[in-house]
Image (tube, rainbow over all chains, first blue to last red):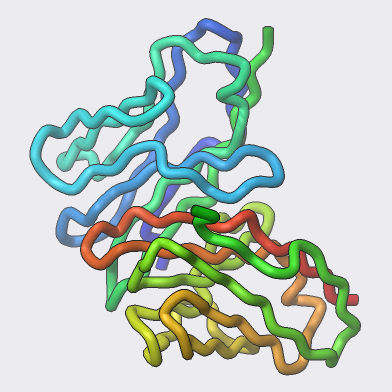
Length: 113
Length: 112
């Protein structure tokens, strides 16, 4: 069963514009939530994570994400996008069933000048 | 620190051939993972290990075997490669209880 949904396959934004990438999860309890970024030809790098506490979490490269329990969402935001942010972004949840992690299908971000 | 390294970076196999992918980490992480990444599918967990000598199945384990004989190494084996195993394979590792994973650069495998 799909535990993580990223409804946007591809998003294009202009440099300097704001960004929001959506992530929804389906799990009974509140799992740990993560956002990773993958630049072309590279492995994944952690942007930020949510375990508990403050529902607005700050990450690297100016990204933040907000956990909303009522909506089972963990959306990633950035106030002003830079051309270097062009990449693929993955939401992940875990650990579930043992020590397994589930990733969304990813959102590809294009930044236009 | 090299972090997580993967060997080889690229490989082409013929159907039925076998091969082993090597993952090594120098961060003294307990947990290690093997994922495959396919277009439109995101990353899917193949197998994982919570410590030396222990392995467990993930979401898509069929056709793969793994071994964790040393804490720093996690091997992924394909005994009889199939075209459906054409993919990019990523290894990752993490500390116990920390859960954020550190990824290697990936291995691109093509099975013809």
